[in-house]
Image (cartoon, rainbow, N blue to C red; front, side, top):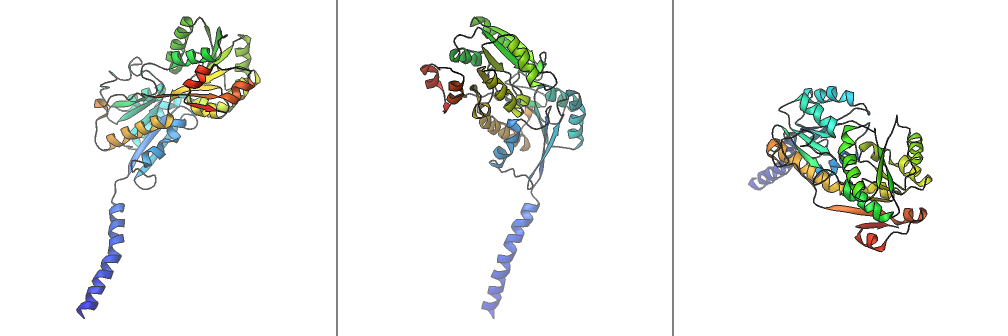
Length: 327
């Protein structure tokens, strides 16, 4: 009898264990993370963020709810969307790009904001300093100091030594978000003996933009760092090929899809840093005390097939410097 009762207790315990674990899981806190950006869909950094968060134990549908908001290319919508995220009582907001960060800062002085992008947060007045941002803002930027425009233009010159005039394609010619990169590219061009001509995309008409570019008779193209130019990259790559224009882009995905070359930080590495900041803040860290993260390693990726199609004979020393050569 005692033996049978013991078996019943063991069996019951075995049945209860999964229920207890399920109960514990049911009680697990669910975090709400907001995203805000200007474009119609998330840029590459945002789309790969869930994977980086999963590696830290944040699983969508279990203990994580993502609250994306996008402005469909209209920055005027960002303030309302930022207020909407605050009203939704998210635990923090990831703001992609300058305009999104400003909108979030105007919407809340207490909710943690993690900025993300190719921007200069101190020069733009978004934080007090990189080492100690202050208030409720911290973040991850794509370059160690300013942008990578100088190095990117130097590499483009190495690939196309004859280039004396380079077109700089921007989402809008006078877009404040691209001004730091354009300014640094112009300064680097002067040192390299090159002329930089800025051409803005008007109303999404890439054919018209390339007509304006080719009217300047450039020898090469510098494509600005923009989430829009990531999502709409195929149009740019195809038109650059059509006009036989060597181009440098911001992300590896551009080169994988047929662009000539890129020099940038690893996107997934940036996402891992971004996920780390999300994790630390959700666990109680104060954003204002967390230094702005900057990458320490960059990748030069070259598409050799594209170079051959353009009739370019890339210097061997440039190919040897590449982290990846796509053939």
